[in-house]
Amino acid sequence: MDSSGKSDNKSKKKAPSPRRDGREAAVQYLYGNDISGEVDFSPERIAEFWGIRLAKSFAQEFTTELLTGIQDHLPEIDRSIRERLDNFAFERLTAVDRNILRLGAFEILFADHIPPQAAINEAIEIAKRFGTEESPKFINGILDKILKS
Image (tube, rainbow, N blue to C red; front, side, top):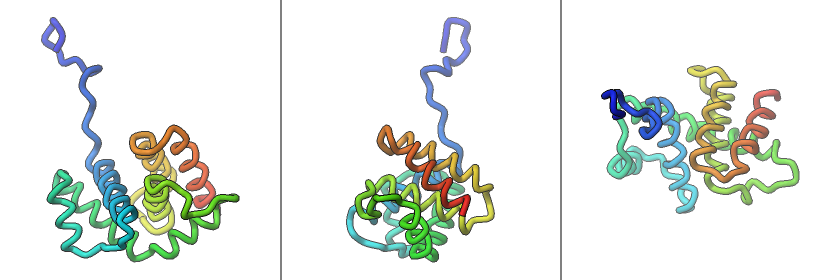
């Protein structure tokens, strides 16, 4: 708070929206699967994840919805990403970028709860938080190609 008793918004970071938190949790879950070399979307594994990753119930439900959709369409999602990687191997993507792309591609191609451009914007914001300096531009380029195809 400043001397007038008002809160100082500059020093406090706003909590992410429940949907953003759900998307970030989905990327974190996918990343964990990716680096461990497992593809495990079992309810038990997801419950274990919620034991170590705090989130409000809405964000947890939204994350589970996203993960279920990604699981159901993973081969198509990965194929769509691979087809838009110019002179770059899918396996060479960082695990963070690969899984942000999976989330964004799922929302563009298969989810009807969000406009595609909003899905791209959300993926870019997550890339800014978790990816490298180049990640947001890279994510934007690939997801834009998916949207336009």
